[in-house]
Length: 165
Image (cartoon, rainbow, N blue to C red; front, side, top):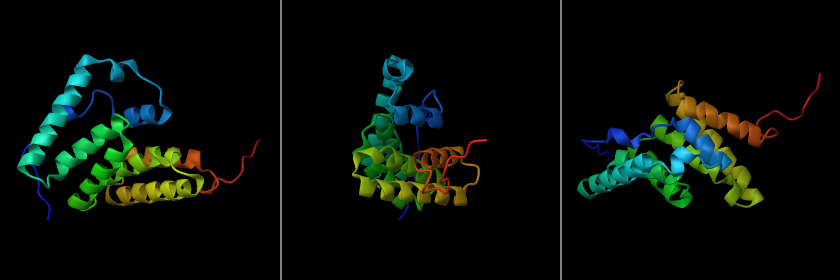
């Protein structure tokens, strides 16, 4: 049963693009405008409160759950992000944007698991990106996630060997 929310705050989107922000999280390089900006900190706090309030009114609001998962991922709270994004995917019927964010969350957690599980994480992230692109072939963040997956696993992605001229 899908339940849509009546209101999703415009402010929940950060000033920086999603792809650039996720790549910042990937590289673990602090960006002053993300860490120290009082405006962005207040924006995230306000967005979190709005999403929580929406969930109090409608427990199955996939937009609010997705918003909380997105915020958690951008703040590197990976366990919470995975839980919320997975729930949003299940509630929203595998919406392309949600699939891409879940793929990023899984990819970003690849280093936190053992070597055997790492391959599974990466394969699942790849499959989610491909599913997102099957639904929306213009979703740039899914393409960018696939690029990072290919860079992290050249042998798994078919790259194999380095050839010089």
